[in-house]
Length: 367
Ligand SMILES: Cc1ncc(COP(=O)(O)O)c(C=O)c1O
Image (cartoon, rainbow, N blue to C red; front, side, top):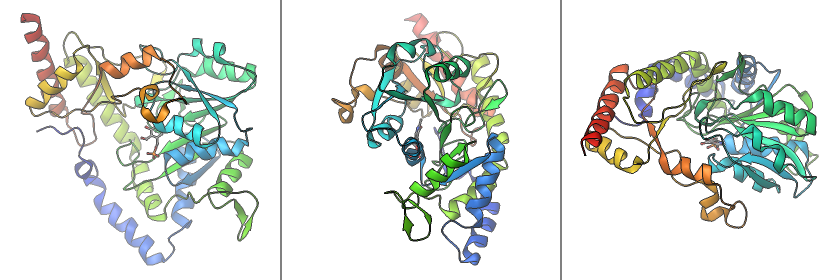
């Protein structure tokens, strides 16, 4: 059996260091906003290349608090890719703002910059982009539109820890940027966690305050905030993993290379573009017979996943909120299949998946 993911095995080589890190927190007796969170924040800011990082409870809160930090007027519009995990859109809705869908580029699966300008209105305040699957959006045209139209840029980097565009890492392009450390992410902790990165100390201070009951000084609440803090124990685990994030990304890139050379004919594989450093949080293929391939692989003992089976605009929760037809997004959701590509997999595992996919193509050719 080749699993899609096995978090026990993916974390096995970190276990001794996790135990030491946990013991240190336990013995310190300090469990909320202590030295581990502080150290992780400065280490992750340095890794990304920003001056500031603020830990929060999860990726959804990182997006939500990023939006709240700007103090946008209720009902303002935020442009967002139509194909993303629903959290990106929920953060906008939960912040009292209106999500406006922008269709993706069918080849890269990320927001199509040529479609942004047409959707800007007098109510548009920001563009929230998503580096889906660990591939950066095309940042030059996006940043240029935001600059010339006076819009705030926010990156959803939940799937892009360490991904880069022209040598510049995810989390450094927007005024403020959001990360998730959900366990399956390339930089995942052992529970929930999230962070924002920015070069603006005032925005960072606002997120810190909003995530701590709207308080900058203890027991003085300047704005109505929430409780969203990165846990001290998770920060300790994240510090261990961050030291090997480049190794994790390199491993996934090497598995992606095996797929590219061995997958055979008939599958649409992720595009490779000059100047883009993809970290393959997900390695997806596309095929009109996606569901048949998924079953075929399962019969051969190979588990896959789908990111995501339902386009956000077709989710019941989005009815009346974000339900305009998005044909490109819907086409991607109907045909995409995520293949195993975890830190727990070996190149031999990927070779087995490739062989099964080649067999499927061969059989199909004979039908
Ligand atoms: C693109 C994207 N944005 C936001 C999130 C939300 O992160 P979290 O689950 O930590 O709240 C995720 C997590 O799956 C994601 O994939």
